[in-house]
Image (tube, rainbow over all chains, first blue to last red; front, side, top):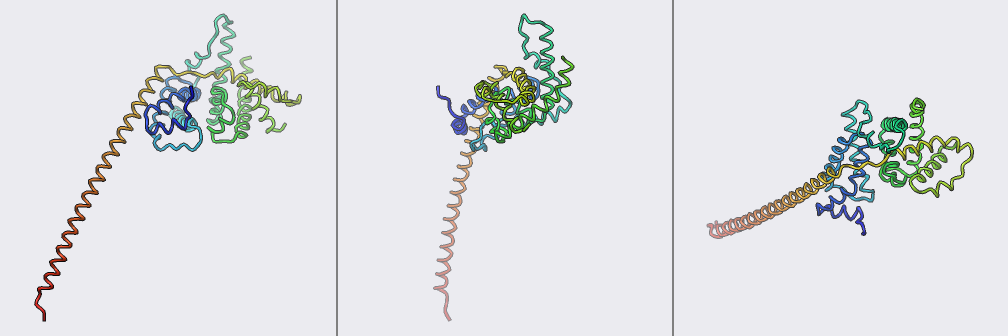
Amino acid sequence: MHEESDSTLIARAKEEPEAFGLLYERYVDKVYNYIYYRTGHRQNAEDLTARTFYQALKHFPRYEDRGAPFSAWLYRIAHNLVANWHRDHSRRQLISLDQLATLKSPSGRDPDATTEKLDEEAVLLRAIRRLPPDRQQLIILKHVERMSNVEIGEIMGRTEGAIKSLYHRTLTSLREDLSSEWEELE
Amino acid sequence: MDEKREAEILAVYVEGLSGQPAAVRQIELTEEEREHLAPLFQLSERLQRSLRPVRPSPTFVHSLGRELVDDTGRQFALSKRTRRVMMIGAAAVGSLVSIVSVVGAIVFLMRRLRAQVQTQHAPTG
């Protein structure tokens, strides 16, 4: 079935509550994923996702569709709320248990290998959270949302070339940060 | 090694991880580039494996969705009511202004007329 474009839904949502509901359904998973990987807790991710959409709803009458993706606006709201959340919880976040639980351990595998894998992934997630917010956003959009550089550029308000360059710098610094910790694990 | 070229190659490699392997096959790397970029390729693969999409609970999605639609409905109803009240208010003010203007005009004309009559009947000399 033909899916309505964001622009059509945005125009309709100015008149019909159900259309805003459709926009919500389209983006709730993406916003939740972004917040979840930025905070590491399901409960906080749910709370901040709800606040993101309530804030979007509050400011929606003044929202103007200027061709930028609607998701860029939502990510910006989520990004600001996460920044406030981090400011309020300024102590270093540890990887939560629910996060480790998402790293499924396939049955029948060597338990030591699974533990090692969990350790490795926990180290990786901790290192990602030490990155500056814009780099965390880039990593999440690239590897969780699997977006192209052009799409990420539209959301982050940068050119495709700037995204490629930022990704390269991000991976280089992440690798430097991780090298010592991974050596300890190996 | 040229950082811009390195960034380009890495970008093509990562796009390849997301389902465009054809682009990866087209990259021609020198031995030095391969050596230099190999750790970044490995890291990007690790990221791709580790960062899996998570899904919010369906109960949460459903209840938040319903709350938002209800809230939007309430917001629309409120703004409709506000608009209606404002229109009625504006119409009432408009009518009042019209009545006052008409009454004012009548009073003004009557006073003028009375003044004229008094001037005509006033003793001259």
